[in-house]
Length: 259
Length: 326
Image (cartoon, rainbow over all chains, first blue to last red):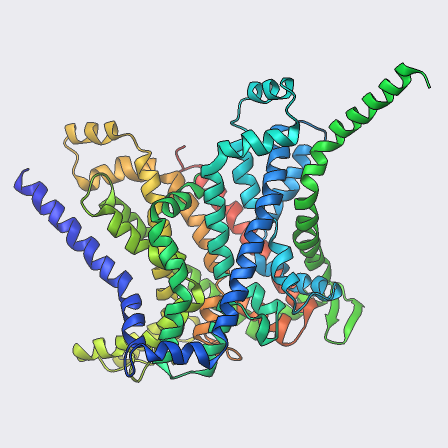
C-alpha cells in the first residue's frame, strides 16, 4: 500500500469514528444517567412508578396481533394481485396504492370519528384492527409473487393442487426472505407507533409503551435518572432485535428505497 | 334429474368459484383499506367543507374553513416553522449520509460496526429519543451545556429558547434582523438536530445501496484518466447516484413535513414550544382536532398538508426529470 492510500484509509476511519461517537453519545448518556444516584434501583423505581409492565404487555399484544393479522391479509391480497388475472384487478390495486400517497395525519381526525361511531375508541380494537392490512407489505409481496413462473402454477394445478394450497405450499415458502422483511418492518413500525395510539386510547390500562413513556416524561419532568431508566427499558427490546438481525434489517431498509 | 344437467350445474358452480376466487382473496385487506384508509381520506376532504366540532355536525360552510386558515396567524406560524424545519433538515439529511456512504463504500474494516452504529437511531422510537435528547438539551444540568461550558460557552436555553438563531448570532453585533429574517428559534433548531441525527442512518444505507449499483469499471476508467476524488465524484458518483438522491430528497421532504413525535415530546403541549416557535403543521392539526375537537377546521389543514406534499412531489419530479440519469 502506498503512503497515500494509508493516509486516506486512516482519514476515513477517523471521520467515521468521530461520526460514530456522535451517533452513540445519546445512547451512552441515556444508560449512564439511568445508573446515576441509585444504580439499578432506578430501573425498579421507574418500572413500578407507573404500570410499565402493563404497557409492555399491551405493546406486545398489539404488535403480535397487527403483524399476524396483516401477514394473513397481505398474503391473500398479494397472491390475488400478483398471480391472478381478472377484470378490475389493476383498478383495485391502484386503489390500494393510492392510499400510500396520503400521510397518516391527513386521515387521523376522520378515522377517530369513524372509530368512535363504531364504539371502538379506548379499546384494543382501535389499536389493532385498522393496522391488520398494510399496503406497502402487499406491494412488496406482490412484486415477489409476480416472479414465480406461471408454469410452476399450472403444473401444480394439473397435479390436483388447489389454488389456496399452492399459495400455502409453494408461493409462501418461496417468499421467506420477503416475508421476514415484511415482519421486521411491521414489528418495528408497530412497536414504535405513537400518534395513533395516543389519539385512539385514553385510559391508562390501554396505554402502549410509547404513549406511556410520553406521559411518564410529562409527569417526571426533572427526574432524569428515572426518565433515562424508562427510556432504556422501552428501547431495549428493539435494540436487541436490531443487533441480532442487523444485516437483515439494514438490507430490508436498503431495498425499500429501490423502486 | 338427468345426469348431464347435474354435471353442468356443478361445472357452473366451479366456474363461478373460479371467477369469484380472486376477489375473495382481496376481501379481508379491502375491508380494512376501505374502512380505515379510503373512507377516512375522502371524509377528510368532505369534512373540510363543513363545520363539525364538539357540538356535532353543523352543516356545510363551503370554503369557510379555508378562509379561516388564511386569517389564522398561528396556522401561518406553523407553516413557517415547518418550512424552516424542512429547509434545515433536508439538505443535511442528504449531504451527511452521502459523505458517510462514500466513506463506507467498498471494502473497509469495521464497515458493519459503523453501519450498525449509524443505523441505531433509525430503529429507536421517536418518543424515547425525544426523552433522551430533552435531557441532553436540559439548560441547567444537561450534558450539552456542560460540554459547551468546557469551551467557555455560556449555557443556552435550547428547547426553551424562542429567539431566532440569526438574531442570536447577529444580536451581539448590534444587528437585529426583523421578522422571518431572525430565523428559526433555537428550540426549533434543536429539534432539527435530533431529526437529522435520527435519519442519517437510513439515508446512508439508501446511498450505500445506490453506490453499490455503480459498476466499478467506471471508477477504474476514471482513475486511468487521472481524475482526482472531486472529479470522480462530480462526473461519476453524483450523476449515476441521482435516482437515489432524488428518492432521498422526496422521502426526507415528505417525512420532515410531518414531524410530530419530536415536537410533541420535546416541546410538549399546550404551547408548541417557546412562544409557539416549534409549532409545526401536524402538531397544530393534532391540537385543533383532538384538544379542541374542531374536526372541520383540522380537516381543512390536513387537506392543505396533502396538497402541499403532492405538489412538492410533482414539482420535484418535474425538476428532477431533466437531471436524473436512470
